[in-house]
Image (cartoon, rainbow, N blue to C red):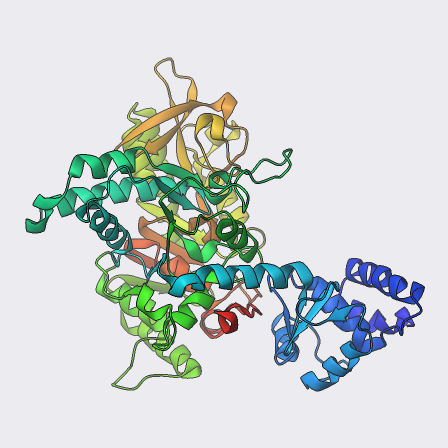
Length: 565
């Protein structure tokens, strides 16, 4: 193999230098055994398979690889076979690298999908665990924001107590600590509401509350006992099952394949697993789209997952106008009695934004300069009000004010980004923001800190304590708690934050800021997640071209999980 043949693909960023270096190592091992070496296509396929985790795929789908690379922004004007047969023929020429399922080769070829060996094994283990015993241990609750998913969890939970069970050990987990903590709070509130219903008389509510109060609550990592310096790194695994009767995973759309594998590997066969989430929201930041794949399969009546799935469609949180936009972005809403295709949905969204102006404002930066200036003033005014609430000595008021309005950006850096808007607001606020811990500074924790019970994504406000010393105030359900700034090592200002970081949160008013140009991360799922964070009002900043791009571009994750369920 002449590796200089890969230079055009390196230049086009189809593969990286690291991919090529790893491929060289594998091919050198083959050469040492005197076996045939792969030619250009085979070598390129090795590199593509090595690239999959970086691009958040679990495999290379040879039926779609051409479209996939074009979607990733790769120059398509390359010598690029479009038929899977050519790729498979190239793979067969190197059997020590490309093997069949069950063989100990670095790469596995299953039909028209090519996996890293470990990724293939993990995907198979997930499928086997979810479908075991006709999935009787599995409950899937799907729905958008405000559709009553947690209430459904509470009802299923109470059914166990009605059946006479007691001392149920429960785990409430989520990809983020913030989401897990919120689930406990909402679950208790839903149980209090259900207690008032006529059939609530037959339930031992003290036992229910005790089970929730004593439940584990934290990240999936902490649930599994992750320890980076420990061997094995996860305390709970196939040799040491999780000690729970019920495991509830909220915001399951954010769960990557690797973590889902760790979870099912550690589940006792007798443990009930509840997966709760919105498959239309953003997928995991790591490889895989587990909940999305499950949702696809569960929608078919012939699937064993169908009867184990509850889809929540009616919502009570979003105003009707914003709910209508959300339904369009989920591609579920018929217009004029006709179910629309993707391209028609793009036109329908544009028409909807132009006509629904009671709760939705659409600012086009190039033409709506006056509206943009007014919005900027409004954002700065809100930040000044937050400062005033903070220095008033009422942390709860400051926390409530912070939740009234939130800027959500698609990008962290660049024009119309988190960095730009945070800098803009702090500049307008004046010299008191020159100190790091200025009063009224909204902050987000960026790393888990179990010692002080703060987790990545937790948001607070800097306020003065009784002596005037800056401290961080964080909401703790209906109350608040303060943390000394000396213990707040990893925080950032969040006058604006990314849409990714906002997932699982809600605000009275949301401003969704789109970039000047389309980008890889600007997808329909990102747009949908941003607009559904509001409880009352929505403002969108972005040109028509960028909005069209966001609506038409969906997240693409190559995966074989759906076909194995």
